[in-house]
Length: 43
Image 1: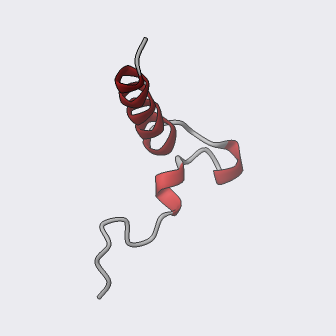
Image 2: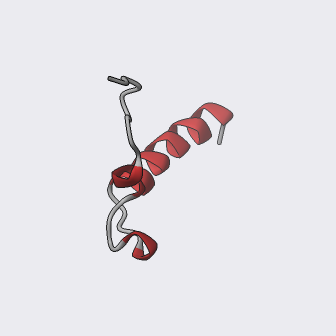
């Protein structure tokens, strides 16, 4: 019912979508599995 609630719901949705949902285009893996250097630390 508010933008704050919508923002909180989107945050939860994006986490689930990117970290837990299996994507057929990625061989059943979640999108986060394709991210290199997720923590932002290059060596």
